[in-house]
Amino acid sequence: MKKVYYPYEEFREDLKELAKSIDFDFDTIIAIARGGMSIAHMLGEYFGIRDVYTINSIGYEDTKKLENVMIYNLPNLRRSKKILIVDDIIDSGETMREVVKTIKDRYPKTDIKTAAIFYKKSADFKPDFFVKYAQDWIDFFWTTDLKV
Amino acid sequence: MKKVYYPYEEFREDLKELAKSIDFDFDTIIAIARGGMSIAHMLGEYFGIRDVYTINSIGYEDTKKLENVMIYNLPNLRRSKKILIVDDIIDSGETMREVVKTIKDRYPKTDIKTAAIFYKKSADFKPDFFVKYAQDWIDFFWTTDLKV
Image 1 (cartoon, rainbow over the protein chains, first blue to last red):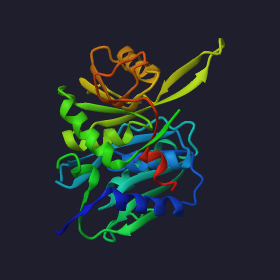
Image 2: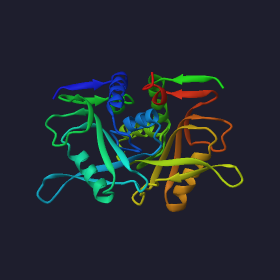
Image 3: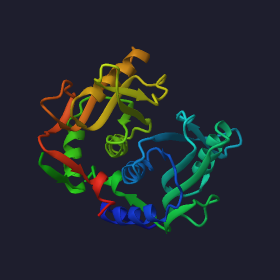
């Protein structure tokens, strides 16, 4: 798969576009760690939201050798009514789907929307808000910039 | 107070320096939200740490009208042994001091170190790792870049 470097300057412009497209009056942002953290940070500053949290996921193989996603570190959301969940890319869609399910199961009254910069059409979950379709492998600046 | 814009390019170089200075074999990163989130994201990628969490704080006035900091959303750290807590700037020092105290109280066996990009000499808490002394008001790119 082709690798494409995704620099901060492009991220900033895409995130402006994402921010403008979000017509949802949310009170809480949850970043899927680690990929969604820089997005959540900047959207939190932009929208003046202080309740910015993270949630974590880990992939594992079950007994049938199927790839599964386990969600952990669910934040306490008793005070949250409208939640925006953010990630960098919706790839297979499995992580975002499991995160939404986990939060809905525990807090059924919350209103949840999802956002990502990139969305792969082959994913089985489509985010409410996204900026670009992904085809190549994306080398995000946060993964590579400290290593050069 | 003089305002100084702090762009991504300078952050990236400072964060490289911070990363190189951290001689601590940590298994967990906790970002103080929101300021520490982009730092935690990139350090997590750099050091290959997946257990990257956030913790939140809110300022309030107590009955004596003193400024206090309340910490909330403490992650579950049962599996964590060595924790790096990160924030963008140690200003008064009160938030970082309270975060360390909150974690130590709940998880007394953990080994905790702290890191920030900026440190004000007037703070009453000195981080274990930092890059620069702060004098002016710093306009971090994550606060301003989406607004221009």
